[in-house]
Image 1 (cartoon, rainbow, N blue to C red):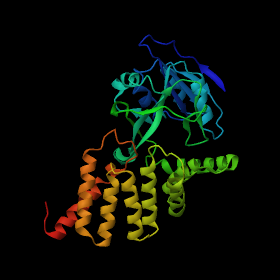
Image 2 (image 1 turned 90 degrees about the vertical axis):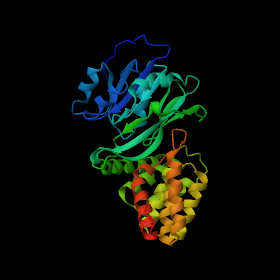
Image 3 (image 1 turned 180 degrees about the horizontal axis):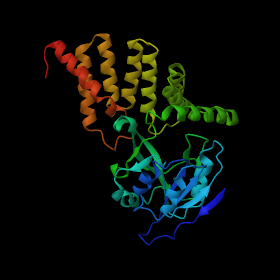
Image 4 (image 1 turned 90 degrees about the horizontal axis):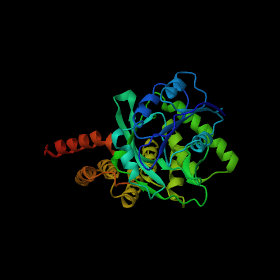
Length: 350
């Protein structure tokens, strides 16, 4: 590890000091946009570079960032913890270079509201830059946390901030003032990223043995790579494990249903999964929509239409207080189209 350049001293801004942290490699197309979205909220910027050959370091230097070189070894947690160890703030914002705040002017004030907590979970909206910034999914992620000795990252990949003292996180869900956009799942880059992730996950399993969090990561990789059998296997194992899966159960059910559809499972078996998801997460609209699609396949047209109506009703009241991943925004057009088809079939087009 080599330090390249130091940042300026803290600015006097308020009682709390905030550090922005990044680990990067060849992010010249993303880093400036991300830093611009938080520059007015933070007091210093720490960048750990893992081997950039483009203008990434030059861009970081233009913001007076504190920059470190780190030799990449397929371990995401170690360089993240290196950035934390060299931060002076009371709070840390740790974004990926392809993430940026939607409301930059509200970031500092929003963080100051949570002085009694340790970790802030923020809403992340995943968009496809290659398809007119279409929204893909929404999830929750720990991107803001206090700079204290017991909070560090763990895991080679899909790393999470962890209380290394007793495993208990004092977290809170933020409102939309701290929401971010994420472009890392854009269609042109996702396949190579998933293949890389799969290799690292399997290496970690060899090192420490298979654990429940690996099933979540493996389900994500195999679903993205089109291996429905393995995606279904690992998503079900994660859902049935005796662990607390914060915010991501909706996404796991989504992967289960997509895999069952690809593998030609019967509508009756899929309906059982959907009803289970609705019972667990009645405030998510997508599973009412999924139920409507399945009921159409079973020939229960009237019941299907009512379920579609329910999905739209729930969606209208969906807000930051629903703390689970959601993919309904990308499915609304399909729901409306199916409702139109039913109305035409019934001769009651609205």
